Image (tube, helix red, strand yellow):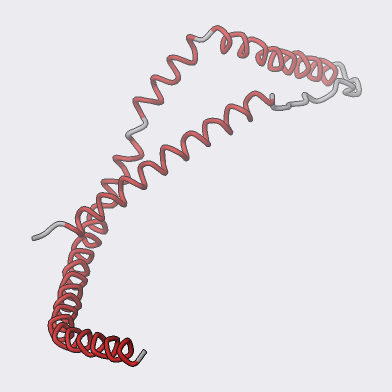
Length: 165
């Protein structure tokens, strides 16, 4: 039993000696790593300032470009929409409400011109649910595209910060 204890004690002593020999270089390496991290953090901070200055200087042009980037798509949308048979049918359906409104207005004017009490009701306008559903779908998909654009902006910023020079 004493032999096992002595062997274990010798092994512990050898490992302590090895640890002491390696602790100096390990401490030096850790200091170098910490210094390199500080240098990198300072470099990235300087790059962030440069990036932020560029964003402040160019945001209006970039925002206008982003806003106008949908103009062609909007024109294509309107062209495609008006070519759709279902859209033409829906427009015809909704135009019936406008026609009714013109008839009611004409009848109200006629009663007024005759000196009669106006008994013709006011036009009741109501939205069709199809428009709400289309709007919700459009907004959902547009928000997803906007999120992709935001991710691209974040990636551009990160690439700029990571760039050397």
